[in-house]
Each structure stands twice: as structure tokens, then as C-alpha cells.
Amino acid sequence: MIKTIKFTILTLITFALFASPALSDEFTKKDLERWQAEFMTAVKQGEKLFHSSLGRNTVSCDMCHPNATNTHPETYPKFQKQLGKVVGLREMINWCIINPLEGDALKMDDPRMIALEAYITYERRGVKLDPGKH
Image (cartoon, rainbow, N blue to C red; front, side, top):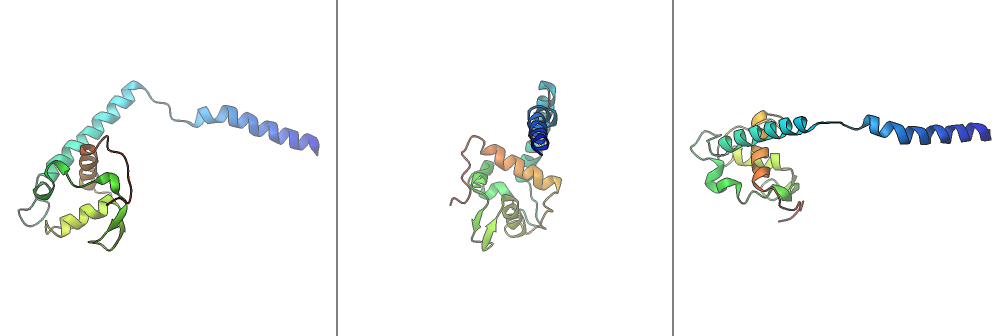
């Protein structure tokens, strides 16, 4: 029985030492450059959407939030009084599309939603995360 326990411990130690690096992601500088370029494409798409009308009236996001100011994505999730509950940034984006813009909600995985979120968060890059803050 002691031999079985020793063997099990040795097996676990061996797995921990050698399996972790094999399971981690490996990527190159070229990968990082490509991923950053794709992210910036989403940011640029989001910026265009932010400055356009996403609803049935002529209101756009930038009319209340020039250059995504006062959106504070770093504070989400948080209690949002307009919705009466704790929400994530995407839910608040939809609230704005539905209400001030008089548009239809975007699905959470809609590429336009992802682009809007990318632009809004990019504009606040460098700001410390502070979920729940008002």
C-alpha cells in the first residue's frame, strides 16, 4: 500500500512538473500582432457605430458621450438604476440603444455589440478597474 501511495504521489508530481507547460498557450510575436490588428479593427468598427444612429431617430451614442466619455466601462458590472439591477456593460449599451436611440436591442454576441464594447473600453484604456463604482 505504501508503494502505491508513493507511486501515486510521484505520478502527480511528474504530471504537475511536465504537463503544465504542454497545456499552456504558445504564441509568437506574429500572433500578437495579428490579434492586436483584429482588435483594432473591432475598435474602429465600434467607433463608427458609436458615431452613427443605431436607432430609428437621429440620436447617436456620441451625442451624450463624446468619444465614449462618461461611459465608465471600468465600473461594470454595477447596479444601474435605469434597469433596477446589477448589469454588465452590454446590457447598458442595449438600454441606450432601446431608449434614447429608439432602436432594437442587439444580441450579446452580435459583432456590432462586440465592436461597441471594444471601442468604449479602448477609449478608457489605462483606467483602473473599479467594478460597482458610481
